[in-house]
Amino acid sequence: MDLKQLQNDLVTLRRIERLLKLSIFTEKDVMRLLSLAEMGIPRAEYLYGVYAFSYLKNTDLTNQWFSKCKSHANGYYLLKIAMFYLTKGNQ
Image (cartoon, rainbow, N blue to C red; front, side):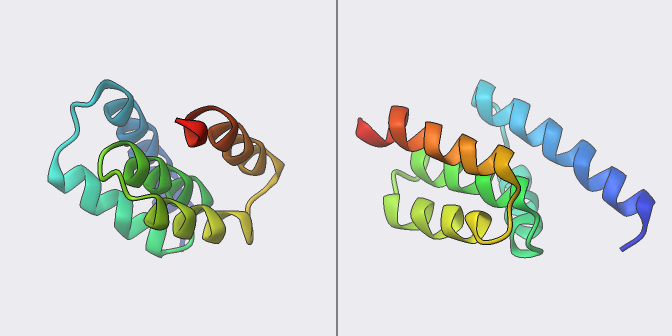
């Protein structure tokens, strides 16, 4: 993967993250997020886990994507996952 593609993926993930927070995403956005998550991008894996919890109400799918993220993410996403479970995971 070249630098330009990485930059495009980052811009896409930032855009989708904003859309998820505002609940104004499209099916195309979700499919792109899933595609990036399947490529093993930790940020996408984390965001898809959040999507699965918040919109699909599927905790098994959330745990699956968070586990993938945890297996190779840096400390930032490990902390985000922990905070997610401490706040939203108890609802």
